Each structure stands twice: as C-alpha cells, then as structure tokens.
Image (cartoon, rainbow, N blue to C red):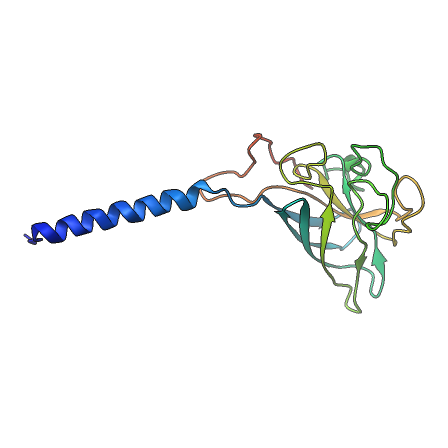
Length: 198
C-alpha cells in the first residue's frame, strides 16, 4: 500500500480543490456562438464547400471556402430564410433573409440581413472569403442565422436589382447549424433542431 504523509495529502487535497475551482470558473463563461455550413451542389452543379461563422460582439465573422465554381467569376452569396435545401434547385430555401423588410444592397449601404459579399473564384474555380457581417446574430433575435440556408448563385450580385440582386440560379446550398458537440447532436440554447440538407 502506498503511504502518503498527512501533510502531503492535505496539500494534494487543497490543490485538487483549487484546480476544480478554476475549472468551474473557466467553464462558467460561455464561448461565443459559432456555426458551420456544408455547401452541397444543386442538381447538375458542382459547387461545394464549407463556411464557418463566429459571433464577435455585434457582428458575425464569416470564413468560407467554395470549390467547383466558374473560374475567374463572381458568384452571388446570400442567407435565405428557410433552412431547407431539399429541392433539386434549392428553391425550398425560400427568399433572402429579410426580417426588417429592407431593400437588397451592398454591405456598406442599406441592405437586408441575407445580403453577403459575392464570392470571387480564382482560375481553379475556388473562392476563399473572409468578411464580417453586421446586423446578424447566431442563436438569437429576428436576424438569427442558425437554421437558415446559405446559397451560392451562378451569377454575380449586382447589389441593385430588387429583391435579390439578379444573381441567377442557385448552384449550392447548405443549412447553417451549430457544430455537433461530443456526446450530443448539436443545436442551440433555444432548442432549435438542425433542418434537413440535400
């Protein structure tokens, strides 16, 4: 049997309590909300990719990588109101997310919650984008992006035509969802389920 001197065991117990206390303090501060989207091609298309989002204060930071695009071309990129990509053409995702009834437009002007900067594909048909979006949130409010759909379009967004920028057909779609946690199915504080994808 291992003998531990009394004074040593007291130190060990005190250290254990301190560590557990620090662990409790660290875990009581919730991490900023995050989301992930797997973009899959619509019928007859090849566009696919991954988009990660993180809440930072009053804005959402977006990091995207999309392949299978038309080379050296811009593609409209929007949040749509329904988290349903089941239709072959992604029409099931509905229109742009626009809870406040604002006009379609560029990020630096008047625009609605579903407006995002266009994706710019390189010569290999790959677009990598990093940007911030104000006026949207992850997990709360009318402009909550969780459970909505991200859609990539075939054409550039002209940021003028109403209500959606004349960006053409939908070539990829994915549902914005919270990441799956170990031992769970994901979801968020409001108990929203992750809608179906294609």
